[in-house]
Length: 601
Figure (cartoon, rainbow, N blue to C red):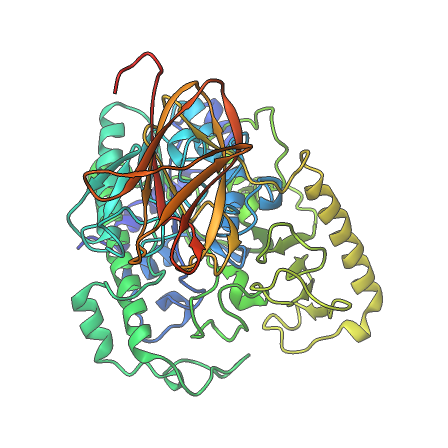
């Protein structure tokens, strides 16, 4: 197993001492642009690292990376995953991007958004993603449509969800992933596969003398937890993982009880991630690319369950610190001195501007970025960092609700309303909390009654922000449409991940919904209905706008299907309803094949 090794960085010491020029002059003098790697893990919390004080979890490679990296020590993300990813990829608040939630059509990002991959690809970078995209599964919303020329991804928000390919449900080991849009049955554990293919991609880019951008968003340690690395699981099952084994001298104590088997499974997944980080470092060293590769490591939100978060309060989905704080490591030996850090408050919206700055890429014309580069805080360039207020908000529902489950943070103060991510709204006046983060970084003393003017000023700033992001585009919070019948994707698979929920629990057996679609070409569309429902449908009815179709027939595989003809391009809400003996429900997935009118079946 390779690791971030101390002797590697000792050899770089003389280079770092001699590296006295500013970054801008380095670019002028012709030093090559760095490669870029962004690693983001899923539901790994702030405290799930040895370098953050976790005494049990084995993360030697990430611990070494932390020692040998620059760090932003007050880095914020969203409470849940898809909003973080939209902010990360665009440099814009996710409320500008149509991505406002994690499922049922609200995790799809508008294709007009410009992504970090598009900026870097246009600048000559080889661009690849390996892992979890979670911003749309269909054309034109996929990673491969948004600037990534190499794409190996899962569908939806994780393995074990309704977007899983049929026959590969819940398979972390030997999963079916999508390689440049084509399903591919693979051998191995999913995290290992992402890193192995990323290394291969980097080797190919290096051979073609192209700088590379690799995005490694793992789906681990997101649940379900039935399929984890066995040796690591056995190790953690042998350890005492009770809450009293973790530091609790400061801040918010952990509860007395915990699900220790679940914790062992999560730790096993994190241990495996750390091993792959070491493998990545070794691969870069073998390529001779470690010195001039900017590697960023972060998590996407708080931990998936109550566990050690260095005394902070909250978990995934919360707007207290434990739900929205992440480590941020920046490893770039050719330019950033190991051990340097900044406590300026930054967030996911700042990552794209920072990477573009590091790569010497001017911000092109297009959508306005909300973030700013924090690279001058770390590389010694003269700069003035003006204080600002950052805004974090996420909750269930179709439309963001003013004051619902938000946090506003500047260098000293944090204002929040913890009204609950799982609710679509709240009742009554907002119960605002204010914390002095310079004196009370663990949020132990609420002080709004002592500083009413601060509450007033920050509330007004929030109002201006909320109005601004809502006015980004007409009908700003409507989900983008899935395009069917394009040359870029055929067949199209529609899943419950991206339907607009109408009935029952969103992913429950008795649920129903529709997809917002656009059929782009006249011709024939063969619709195959896939259902996991054991009860047989007595009838199937499909509607699209004002048109409707019945008389679906069983095919050789036992699924119901029907071919329809469309004379003109059309768009609307596509719904398929299965009539059972006692209720009507929606399908598990739809498979739609397009053929032109002139082409025989």
